[in-house]
Image 1 (tube, rainbow, N blue to C red):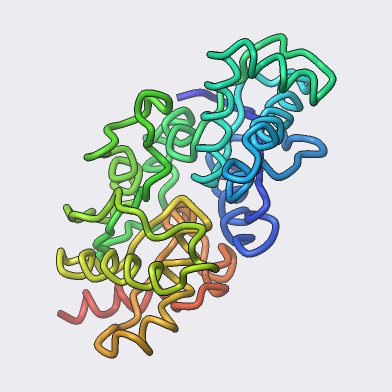
Image 2: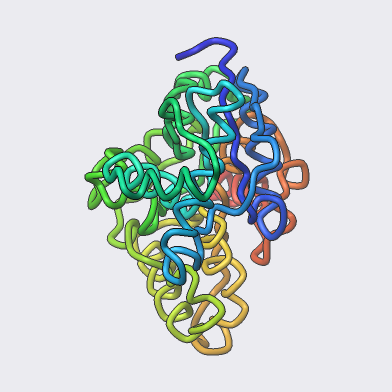
Length: 295
């Protein structure tokens, strides 16, 4: 645990648009836990969605530009809460560090040199650094009645030889964070499976099939809510449920929250304050708690 922690913050494109509730809830939660952000000044898209398959040099330069900004701000570490951004940043950083010719090309594009390495953290690493016990210490509501399926997706812990974070097949770090809220976690099969990610636009049929299987498995294993740490995953698993009900007529609404929203509820904030009311599938913890009490 670190007191009065201050870290660099790379919001990424989604957090300022379609996933603004992720940004809202994250900022509120970390402030409550005694941590402050130093947002990267003049940050830009990291190229996570498509740049790396259309122009590899450009994708590395886009990612490393943001890491360079963190370096110029005197930061030793930064958090990228979007799993896709985190993955793109650490992969580009690894490639630039490992291949002198790539580093030289990136430095040429950016017209500057890198002088130090900035550690890029994902959301889970941030909470581990803050101290999981701080969540429990500041908890105002014990989230009894919630059975949570922790969904990592395919980018948060892979490739393991580069991310070097948790187990790529059976990760447990998100479960450890959730348990600090008083909620229970379920053991299920699809927590590191891909939801279709950026195919959400071009191949909606693939996304619907993959996402429906993920939600169905969570339900089968007793979950009544899912938590994620990626805006793209949330789009596919939350917003696409409207289309799922047209294709899979047996599908029933299943709430999907950002991990930060779940923590915020435990810290005493309400759904509207955290932006949960912006989701496609509605969620009200008090209703779930009342149902449990009535049983």
